[in-house]
Structure formats: structure tokens, C-alpha cells
Length: 217
Image (cartoon, rainbow, N blue to C red; front, side, top):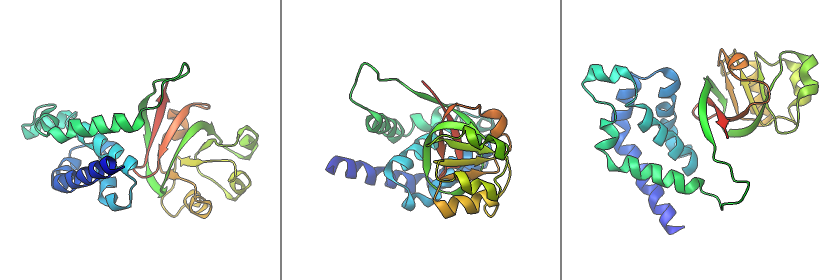
């Protein structure tokens, strides 16, 4: 526990020291990727696990894009010149380790969609696309709801879902209000969620960074 606390303090210090650099790079990244950096502005409110996920991804993304060549920065230069980036990835891997079993699966993730955070939190589970009330019968306990926009009828299934993702809306839309009322992690305004996510997909909703990731096992 002492070592974990020390590593967390080092991580938060590294974020503080690189804040100016990260904010600069955010102007050159696609919005979906820059959201990792924007989320770090609320680092004091984040758990260590969520924090290291956002920070590590921010460092990873900020040197992948061709736009950086316009700044005279070579791919990988940022992480290579900062040894703490490698150390953070090692710490992240350590946090994710589980005791090996015959059924242990190694999972990878892919970016699916991003939007605005309406109710912060995280959830992982089966995606269930619901376009109207007739689809309510598809919803199972623990599903993450994918829809264009919720209506008052969705209160009927709020107790079943662990996350909400919508194509439309902002932080004061119906889905956002519903999510905050029931404390359900929610990302709204993803535009293509109902088309980029398939029914039954295993997904992870990060409603701190405002992103949706597909879990590939």
C-alpha cells in the first residue's frame, strides 16, 4: 500500500509538471483523443486507476498524429525523452494483473465513439441498442444502453442499465437528467454511437473522458 501511494503521488506530480505541454498538444489532436487531456484538468477528483488510464493514453496519443510533424516533433519523441511515461505504463500493467487461470482472457480495446460527459463514472458490459420503446424487452440487467435519445418512457428500464450512451443531446438533455437522477454513467452527443456500436458488443464506457471503447478478447 505504501508503494502504491508513493507511485500515485509521483504520477500526480508528473501530470502537474506536464500540464502545460499536454494542453499545448491538445490543440493538435482530434477532439476524441484530446478528451483524455481535458479530463486531466479534473485530476483531483479522479481515482488513481482512472487517472493513470487517462494520463497514459494522453501521453500515447499526443505523438501519434501527423499534425505533430508540423511542429518538428518526431513520432515517439515525447515518450522517449520522458522515462516516466514507460514507468507509468508498467504501473498500469501491474494494476491490471490478475491471478492466472485456465479461463483468463487477454483483452484489448478499440475506440468506438466519444461525446460529452453527462454523468461521470465508468461501466463495462453488453451493449444494447434501443431505438424505441418496443426494444425495451431486449434489455438485460447490467446492459449499457445505446440510443439516439431517451424519453420519459426510459425510466421503466433505468434500474436495469449500468450506462447510457446517446447519439444526440448535451449536458442538459433528457438522457443527462435521467442519468444524474439515477447516478448512471452517461455520455451524450456521440453522433454515431448507434451505428458504430453493435448490439451485444462488449464495451467499456469511460464517462470521465467521455469515450466508448470496444473490448476485444
